Image 1 (cartoon, rainbow, N blue to C red):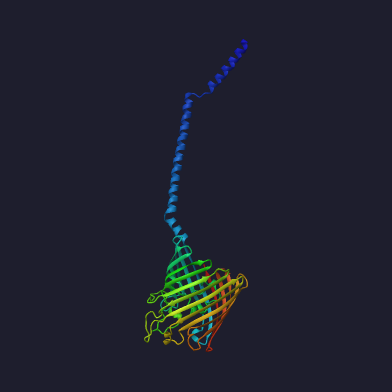
Image 2 (cartoon, rainbow, N blue to C red):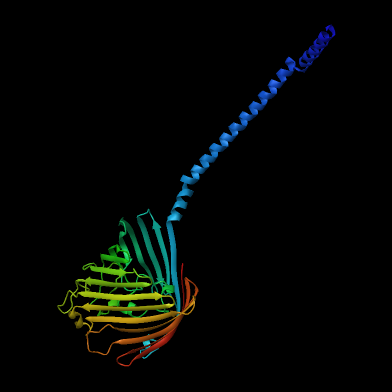
Length: 406
């Protein structure tokens, strides 16, 4: 019994002695505290440096998102550029030597620029150089064909003001080279409509119902100078260059695109005085009314276009040219796309700028050719034409062209 008690006591003493020996001394504890304080100070310094870096990063991000660079990026995202061009080779022979030619011509080089101010307001412009070189003694011209602002004032309805293309025919508003057949534009939408035709004013557009749209506006009009002896409609384009505004013109169009591949449209324009207040031989106030209608249809590889345009002018214009009170033309154009890249077409055209008279002035022209699309926006064109008028004069030749848009 006594021996057991003594054994237990010895064990307890050994344990207590071991614990006492394992405890650090006061000096050791102070050294440990100093090391821990140094580590805490180091961590605090690191956190301060990280906070400073984070703040600098936030400042840098704020500068990027609200500074000049951000404004430039925002401007670029809302601004668009584009354009198109056409190089032609024309080899024409005519009974009228003035129409004969054998030449290369950079017919058009055009740049587009647009800007979206917000979801409802935008700007669009079109700048063109014709025939490569413009200036005194040169054959080219520098033109601003479009420069307008457009505003969505209601759902599916918008208004624009400035310089814009007249909504008439098939080529006047959409004339990038890859969108139509033939190197040159057809003679009806050149001599009767006349494309390209732009004016300055205001226009309202919108959708009446699904597939049915309208355009209606008031704008500058034609000026066919009586003192210069002009009578052809194309001679009246003022191109919004100090354009006479004594008499405005009014245009309205309805267009239907509700069936796949189909476009039906008709345009009416009226102008009270294409002489713009001038008189000749006591005559004044030559009114003009245009009626145009067309159909375009595409079904698989088969395409078809047809257009009719007619001007009815006041008969007093006949003091300048007999028969000029009626000017009209039409064409039909079937086409077939053999492959995704190659398409062929034929077109018959008939037009007359003195259709109201008895003189033999009606022109008939047949065109035949093909388009080859290297890319959907790059096209090669080759075509042949043969034109005759009622007097028997002949004008024929062939054209080769390359066109692009972007």
